[in-house]
Length: 563
Image (cartoon, rainbow, N blue to C red; front, side):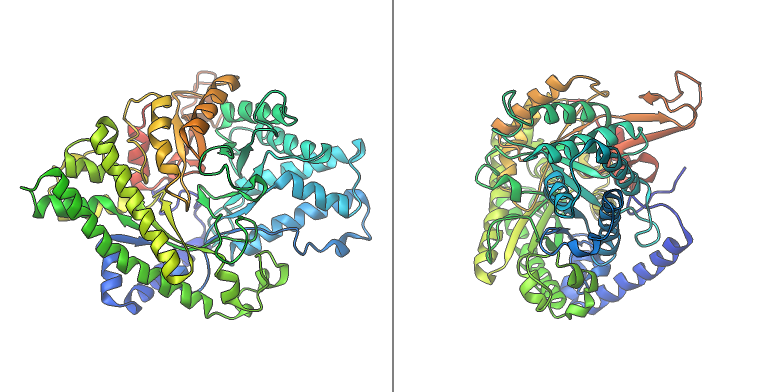
C-alpha cells in the first residue's frame, strides 16, 4: 500500500525523495521572498500557487510545434525500419527532455497527421512491410508513457496525444493503431492521455471518412476510459480550426492569442493560480449571517474581487520573472524550436502563453451561501453561473488591460481538494455540512454523489464550458465498464455537443487482479480468489492507481456515484 502523495503519478525512489526535500525547501524560499500579502494568501489557504517550485524559473505546459523544425536530415542515411524506430525514439526523448524543462504537461495536436507527415518526408513508405514496425514503435511509446517515472526521479511524463482528424490512409493507420495498441497493451497500461477530436464531416457521422476510427475509439474507452473526447462542434469550439485545437494534460485549453492566430500549436500555459471559493463563502457566512442570500452572494463576489486582484499581481510577477530568463535557460526548447517563436527573445515566446485564474469548490461555496447545492435549485444555478461569468469577465478585463492572454481555468484540484478543506476546517465550524465528505469538488463540477442522470449532469455543466476558456472537462460516472457499448457512449457525446460541453470523459471503477490479470469491480478476484488488487481510477483528468491518490481525492473516490 502506497502512502498518500502530493501527486498520484509519483513512485518512490531515492532520487525522488531527495528531490522532494529540495522542492519543499525551494517552495519555502519562494514564499518567503514574496510580499507578505501574497504569500499569506497561499499559506492561509485562500489561493494555491501551482508548481510553486517553478516560480520564475520556467513555464507550465506546451503543445509541441513538432513540424516547425523537425531534423529530417539526421534520418537521411538510415534504412526505413531504422527511420521508423529512430523517429519514435526522438519523440520519446523530446518528452523526457522537455518534461524536465517545464513544470506541466506536453501535447501533440494531431498525432496521426504529424507522424505520418514526418515519416513520409524522411522516406518511409506506407507499405505492409513497414506497418508492423510502426505498430511496435507505437506500442513501445505507449508503454514508455505509462511505466516511465524518471521525471524528478519519481513522476511519469504528462503526455497527451490528440487524434481524430486523419487526412490520408497513412494517418488513418497511425490513429487506428494507436488506439488498438493501447487497448491491447493490458489493463495496467493507462497512459498516455489520448484525446479524440469529434468533428462533423471528418468522423462524427456514419458517412464521415474516419467514423470507423471514432467507433474503434469508443470501444476502447468502454474498456479503459481512454480516449477522452474534445467536441469540436460544441459552442466553445465551433469557431476554432479543429486542427489547431488540442488538450494538454487533464484539461488545459490554449486557443485565443493576442499576438497571432488562434491555435494551441506551439503554445502553452505559463502559470496558473487557483482560488478557494468555499473559504470566501465561509467567511461571508460567518461575518454576515443575517443577510439575505442575494446580499451574501454580493459580499462573496466582493471578497473574490479582492483576492483576484492580488492573484493577478502574483501571476504578472511570475510571468515577468520567467520572461527575464535567458534563452540559454531553456536549452531543449531553444534547440528544437517547439514554441511558435524561437527562443531568441524569451518574452516574445512566452507572451503567446496563457496566465490562468483558476477556481475550485463552486458547489460547496454556493451551498454555504444559499443552503442548497446549485444544481438542485434553478435560482441558485443561475447565480452560480452568473458568478463564473463574472470571473471570466475579470479575466477579459485583464487581457485588455495588460495585453496578455489571461484565461479562466476550471481547476482539477488534485492536491488542493484536500489541502483547502483541511485548512478551512481548522478555521471554521468543523460541523459545517460541506466538511463531512472531506474534499472539495473540482471547479464547477456537480457533486460526485448527486445521483443526477448523466444526461442531466451534462446539460447543467455544459453552460460553464463556454465561460471557462482556460480549460475544463465534464465527466460521466458509470457504475462499471460499458464493454462493447459504443452506441451508448456516442449518445452521451451527441448530447454533450448540443449542451455546449467542450471536453468529455467517461469514468468507471476498474480493478485488476495482480495474480491473473482479471479486471472488473471486486475486492477478491472472481477467477483466482486473490486479494492483491490494483485499483485504477481517474484522479484529476488522467488515470492512476488509487493507492497513490492524495487524501482529498481518495475521499472523493469513496463518494462517487454512478450518473
